[in-house]
Each structure stands twice: as C-alpha cells, then as structure tokens.
Length: 303
Image (cartoon, rainbow, N blue to C red; front, side, top):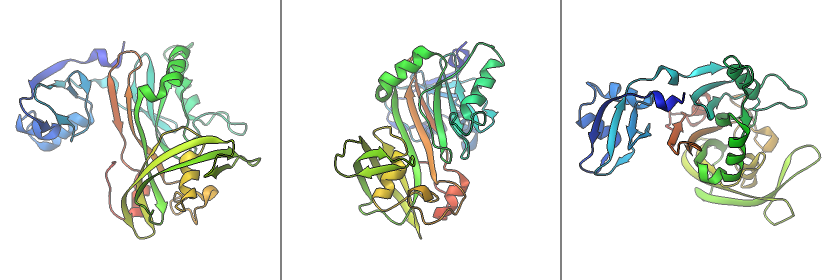
C-alpha cells in the first residue's frame, strides 16, 4: 500500500482569501496553540488541494482546499545506518543522509553505504526487493537522496530528472564573502588522473556545468549560500565555488584552508519532486546541521 493511501481526513476548510498557510491555520483555530499547529506541518498532516504541505509560509489562494489528516504512523522517520528514511511508498524512498557515509559502494568500501543499508531494510519485508540509485551525494556531504524501487522508475527519473525534480538545492558555508553576492558559475569540468575535478571557464572539451548561488548571510570568515546546481556533475558545487575563490569550508580537496567542523559544510536541504506515478507534489526540507550553523555564529533557517 502507498503511504499516501492510508491518509484519513479529519477536517477540511476552504480558503476564502489569500493568506499564508500558518496564519490561515491559526486563524481557523485548527489546534489550540501555535506549536501544535506547527507540529501538524512537521508531521505531514496538512494537505493543500490534495498535496502534502510542510511550508509554513506557503501562499494560499481563494478557493484552495486545506485538509488536516490523521497522523500516519508509517510516516515516522526510520533510522538506518548513515541515514533516516523520511518518505517511502511502493515506488520511491527518500532519505536524509548523514555526513561521513558513502551513497554507494566504491573499490575501497563495499558495505558501509546508504545504498546497502536501504537494501537490507527493504529485504526484511521482501527478500527479492531492492532499491535503485538515482543520484549520489559525496561522502562528507549530508542531505536528501531519492531511490527508486524498480528499474523502470530508475529509467523514468534518469530521462526526466528536470521534469520530476522541481527543486534540489543546497546550503553551503564557504570561506570569505562572494562578490557579487548572487550569481551563476558556468564552466567545463574534467577529471584528472588523481580523480580530482578540474574547472575551466572556457570550453576545453569537458562537461558544461552550471551552478547558481545566492549569499544568505556573512559572519566573520564565512558566508552561508543557497546553491542550486542546474547540471549534475561529480563534485560540481565544490569545484565551482573554489573557482570563484570561495571554497566550501572543510573542503581541503578543493581549496579550503582548514576543516573546522571535521566535514564539508555542504548540505542538500531542499527537495521538491513530482511523484513519478501519482503526480503528487512532495516537498522536503531539512534544517542546516548544527555543526554547520556554528560557522555562521547564529542559528539560521533553511532557505
């Protein structure tokens, strides 16, 4: 059974005027306290026009139908070695990967991977089950990953990634303060014999790569950026931020001066996808890890 098919509607209200979702829920007194209402969003108990909504600042339009759903125990996060499952159904699994864990096996590491942990998990229910890799995150990078549960959907994602994945963005803490504060990096990437990606601002026969960035805040030696890769290349964000003179904190492979939090300060914290089978819009947001937050002094929210 799909996770979404177990939902039971407890309450349904139609918006009569434009409003932000949280303000609307508070005004309608969906729950007694503001924290209780925010908990509904956090536990994926709110739908707008039949689609899950977790953003408190989502804009409602007149006529939008807001539903309060019964809490589905199957949506509880399941902790695995190196990741936690935040969404699963018969077609896909979304996980939030920890820094320090490989996405998939390498010549040196075969078992301590998110891919293997997920395969062990699904085979507890069905010995023939397996998951299929759609993309990767570097070992020291944390954040969202999506896996397919059959090869047909793997192919669908590979051919339609930009159609199905509406937003996949990162928080990066870099050394220095980028100038300009917002921009796009376009370069051509090649890999040398030491497996290090090299970036050229002119076409050298490598893979054209495009990354958009925006500075959210700067504190002392570091700046917090929102980063959106338009293309998917190995180490793309890391090497292109080095190219503009602002390597990711902790990324000594690509120019960082030190490693203050014993990891690369890069986190894939926003994922919005169109479900490949149901068409449902799924939105996931993960807060910036606490050790990354320390580099910019004050607690910051995911942009």
